[in-house]
Image (cartoon, rainbow, N blue to C red; front, top):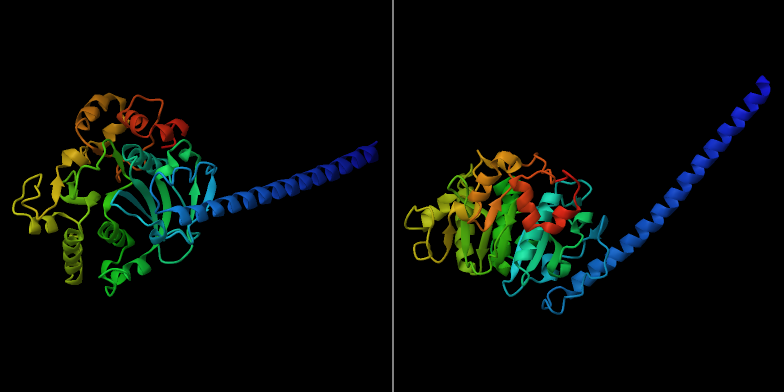
Length: 364
């Protein structure tokens, strides 16, 4: 009897391992087929994007209509900003860092996608450029399910090689990496250079767009501390951008780094007064919007976004703003529970409804 049970047990064990091995082989086979298919499909999508970008919006209308983007990879190896050809100053730029990821694969999170969606919905006649900065040729962008339902027809993904891009500007002989040190500061310079070269609007992915900015020409914003920030700006004229860039480089080359980069110091130098909101006449053609316009939430109350008790207070503060500064060091790690009646949930539901609709309970 013992021998019989032993044989049965041994045979069952063999059968179990054979079945497990077969399942593994089948899973690997399906994964390879799926990966190959999605890679080919999206490589074709990238080629379509590279060849068709730069046409008028009407001509681009069907560009992404049949491309399933959820949880796939877009390869940006050959899709540079120059290939995308921003033009007519109807551009909105988002800039992301693709350098720190050793795999060179980037994945937009829900909050970044929400910011992009809010800009897309308020600027249907602009091209929205999602640009990844790099020093090499390989960038892979993972598209998540959060992009379901977004109006892709005016969104473009691309990469920007920092060294190559700088080589095509008047600052090609400037050792940017040595001067600025951190990529965070280099990224700020690139924002200005994109607007210098192509014109348009830059929006940081920590911001939610409430109103269209297309009728606001040549402006920056004061942040919640009263200093001029470069998280939202619009430039069309190269000479004004050159003033900012040259002053910034002069500060850095003379050792005046600290926090002087892209702050009120340059604005105060160029403008004739120190009011909260500078006008164009006083500032040689550009305007600085008040913090109520772009930064209605100060650091010490931003946590109230996530507390139902303070919803009324927050909604009152953002009522007249065109931009909402949703995310900073104090709010980045706080989840937004979409089932609760918080100001954060209401803002996202209204200004990025598609993204808000596909996320789970507290994935923001």
